[in-house]
Image 1 (spheres, rainbow, N blue to C red):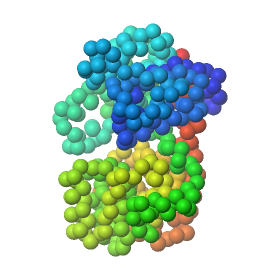
Image 2: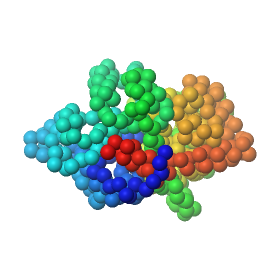
Image 3: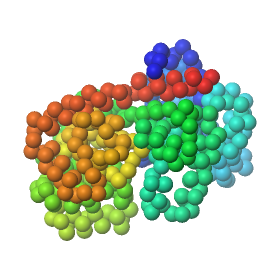
Image 4: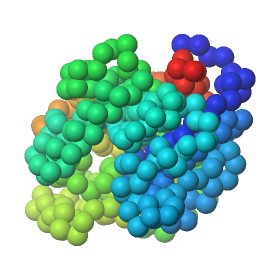
Length: 380
């Protein structure tokens, strides 16, 4: 891929930025990371961020080189409809070169602007695991995904896994879909001072050694099987889960841990600045998710030189290659064995850690933005 500088080719790109302003989880992080990378490495462009609402959580999104657009007039009382139907008229006169839907959708009528259109596809979990979603959600999201795939000039997949899924499930032609990986916050590319490690340990009452998993507390993340795996392998360490979830599922996890004799600690108030320290102090990071489009926590753990155990058969080997141990996410014994081998074979573990760290260089922010701008430039 051409690695020429992006600064020579300033563009006006408009984005569906709802998730950046209103979502603190995966899609929100994807959008915010992209915008931060644009600001740092392609800041001479003009970036118009369309959001139905701004709660003021991320004020830097309203600074140069960004311009925020929100519903005006009657659209103000129907912001969700504005996002689906009103964005094209709001962008009229902005001389937009490219409109980029960042979360698997494009607004109706965007073609009338006369700009090129790009849509990012993150995953097809709603088709692979339909039982995790309501029939209404599956129908509506499948329809909007199919529409976006049909109308977009170019489709971006966040992994080779996602690229294959959209070719298989939606019949996307290979020449219309490109892989542009996502990265993680710049904090994960920086050293962490000892005093910060200790401050985070004290704040969250972290033990001296622990097994870690980071991500939303939900069935798909497979936390219950981590508990079973640790019990099966006689791993006598606390399990620390960092993430938010509803009260019912949290209680289920606590009951499951008690049943299997595993000490469980749930941290739901860790801020982004604390995450690198939490990763670095862990003995092993375990992520046996049933399915992901990418898996930012795996990248974050690898960047923190934390040994990784992850699901086999999906996209995680794109992130860490042979720098992690992989196990069938449905096999608690296999997960437990991988955790055991990681903890008690220090030489092999350190070799894998170094391989993973080296492999993650491909996810550096500058490279990702070069790839994204190359996609944009290919259209204009």
